[in-house]
Amino acid sequence: MTTAIDNSQRVAARIAGWSGLLTFAIVVFGNYVLLNPLFVAGDAAATAQNIVAHQTQLRLTVVCFLTYSLGVVVLLSALYIILKPVNRGLALAGALFRLVFAFLWLLSPLNLLSALRLLSNAKYLQVFENDRLQALARSILGAGFDDYYLGLPFFGLAATLCAWLWLKSGYIPRGLSIFGVIASAWCVFCAFVYLIFPTFNKIVNDYIFDTPMALFELTVSVWLLVKGLRSVTPDQTQTGVR
Image (tube, rainbow, N blue to C red; front, side, top):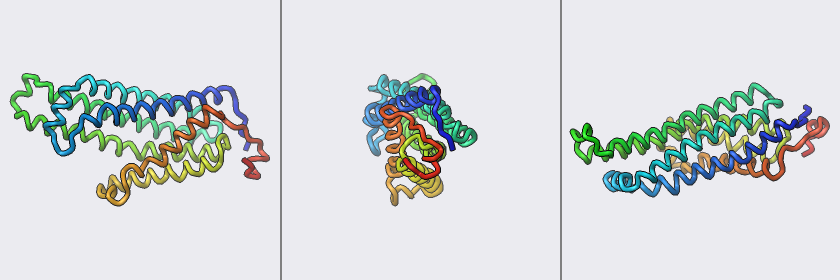
């Protein structure tokens, strides 16, 4: 298979590299720096008090999550341009799976704004007891966890298809591509099992579901920025020379 690379693919590779790194940094910052410190385990009232006292911080989280979704759309577009010469159908399927994930991710900022509305002390909410509003707000915030794990199978399927196309193309090292196929397929398996059996995370820690896949995608992003796409001759593809 000939894998000649045109200029649009090279430009898309740089866009994919930057968008992959930036989206990762944005979602980590939004989750672990802005959002998670507001939660108090097992205490809905304290969590509600933190949210009311740090509304700007919560709204910044909303902006981070919206920016992340936008970055995912940019990334999937760039990946489609890079990989469509290898197999247009699989590249399109990967892009659509990632697009579904981006849409599902938008539920998280909607949940954050809904929780903030419940804690806004609006007059029409005063018919409810304060502790009930706090418990309901905490429940809505917790739904963000479900939003992510509902979208994770789509993210994993997109990453699996892309890793397979990376492997077929020879644009990145073969070993990295094989690791990507395994790590992404593992993520899909874990996500589906977890949705069926919620106690699965007591056997396999939640972070182990997607961490290998995240490492693969980060490594590919760095590779695209530092090394770019590699041209592979037909002879090299047939003999497996990398």
